[in-house]
Image (cartoon, rainbow, N blue to C red):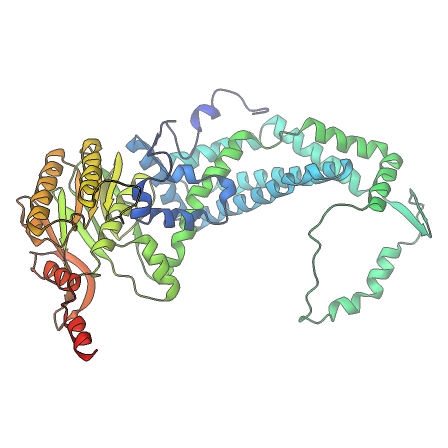
Length: 516
């Protein structure tokens, strides 16, 4: 960085996402769990309209080091202060304007390109000065944002920055002081230095001021979005450059000498800040309707919990339609690692499993998670086995395909992995499904992976060491689901209901056949 004493700032501030420089990619392409857990929808919602920041790879990357997670959590804690968040959002908005102005200048003519660059540079330099002044007294506790504040302080107070800023203001002031006369007659435009004649611009402005003040609000004037100059405007600018060679020479010199005016560290932090800001903007509407988010405690132990958890993707969808969002709790003590969820169809079992997986994924990125209080661990990966329709090109049978998929998961999973299994083994007999399911649970127990197993088979919830959770119905009207999932012994109704539906033997199905 120009003008800053080397060796200090760069060591302190590398990134506000990867302080140790280490990361591990989950997988190339689109992992199954991104789709199965609706995480793809969450990420799309967060970065919608902001693809230019290239944040998608960050949301697909789980840190190796728990210190990185805590580093990000501390930044989110700082951003809970509205004043700090507002400072950084204003910084981001100004930087966005700078980049937008710079992105189109290559298509402009020489002098307009240089003028736009000067204006963008001045906005950037002013933004840095305002940022330094605002951060100076901000109440910061995170290592990342305090390092950023120190960096900006050193940068703005460096000799090179002050000289650059002074030069930009001087060039702008000299250009703004130019006064010239323009004479327009048929087929001829004459440009000359101002000789002190009366300013017709002001006369015309005053003459038409009453029309401007009384303009009907219902009429909207179209705004020009094309900033290119026509041939007459271009030639006038060329003539002005000849009349005022000193001022336009300074402009050209500034453009040529400061093409890399944006500091690379500032550019990096600006981009990385969007990871924090866009996520907070994404969850803000949910917080406004009373849903809770928390920064989870990150532990190395297996006694984990999340109280008030909910499916973030589903909550966004329900909130937009005004529907209520149901939250649930989960808790595992040391030695407990498999939750078997049973209950009626469409009773919230799959939603519960998605919320479970999302909580671990979001926590591992250092993000606030849905819930009022949580204690989770840093996963090395998340694996999902959700029901898939048969593919014509797949020559394996449904059962064989299920077993091949789950084998691949079990071969890869570790004690730091989370596995979500959703209603597999529906293509085989009851006895075989129970036998295979018990064997899968036994292998997961031995691996010590954390698992949520959604099933119709109550027998799997009775396996030794398994935590049984059941999707509830309204006691006064069993046909009504509450979408609450609680620790409870299996009630034997889920599979019976599934079999009845499969063979068209529910009360409603039989009644329709009788009437039809």
